[in-house]
Length: 344
Image 1 (spheres, rainbow, N blue to C red):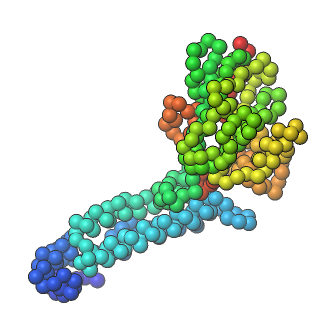
Image 2 (cartoon, rainbow, N blue to C red):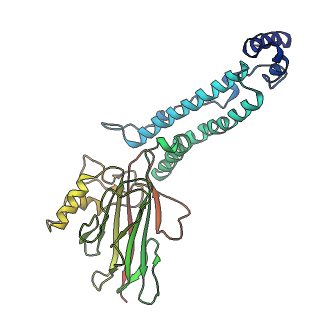
Image 3 (tube, helix red, strand yellow):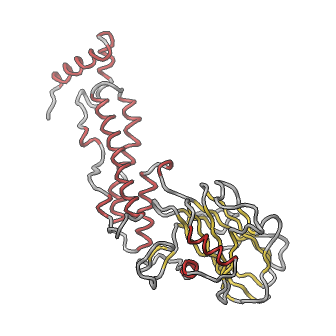
C-alpha cells in the first residue's frame, strides 16, 4: 500500500490524539515515524524466517529423539521472537512507543532473527555427523534461553604426580603416566546431576570409581558447582606395575538417575561381574560415527556400536583435563578419557 504524506499525517494525528491528548500531538506524531511519515511494513521489517527447523528432522523411531526435541524447541523460540518483533513494529506504527524505543527493541531481535537462515543452512548442509551435532547445538544455544534448555556442563580432570614431580598437575587426553605415578579425579557439574565413573585396565578388568560409599562421602546426586574428588580427602590412586598399556576412564553424567548403571555398580561391588550395560559402555567410541547409536541409548541391534555423547568445550581451563556440554536437548554426557600406562 502507498501512503500519501497528507493522509498519513491525518491518521497519525487522529490516533495520537486518542492516545496522548491534543497538547502533545505535534511532539508525539514526530516520534511515530522513522521515514517522513511513512509507517513501517511490519511483514518485511525483519529478516525472513519462514523456514521451520523441524523440517530438518531425520525422523525418530518411537518417541522423539533429542535432536527432534531440540528442533521443536528452536522453532518455538523462533516463533516467540517473531511475535515480539511484530508487536514492537505494530506498537511503533500505533504510536505506543517512540522511534528510539523501537530501535532499542528491534535491533537485538533483528540480529537474532538474522541468524535463522545461516543456522538452518548449517544444519541442512552438514556433511558429517559431528558437524550436524555441532550445528544443531549451535542453533539450540542461539535461540533457546538458558532457563529453558535441557543442558548439563561437565568439568573433568585427572591430576597426576609422576615420580619425578613435586606436585599434582592436570593431564590431557592420552597423556603418558609411568608406574608409581599417583593420581586422583575431580568432577564438577553446572547443575545437580548423577555421576558414574569407571576405569578399564588394558587387560579388560573394570572397577568403579564413583559412586563409592566406602571411600567417598559424597553420593549421587552430586550438587551443582560442588567438586567431586575420587578418592576422597588427600588419598590418591597409585599406578601399579600391572597392565601396561592404555587405561580408559568412562565418565557418565546425567540430569536423571541411570538405573542400569546403578545396577552395574552394585554388581561390580558384589563381585557379580560386568553386565551388558557396562560391557557396552566399555566399547564406546569417541568419534561421532553416524552408524553408531549414542551410548546408553536403546538400540534394537545389540551388536551395533555406540558413540560418546556430549560436545567438548573449546578453551579448556588450565585446571581441567576437559569440559563437555550435553548435545542439544540431551540430558546425558558420556565421555571416554584415556592415558598411557608406561613402565617407569
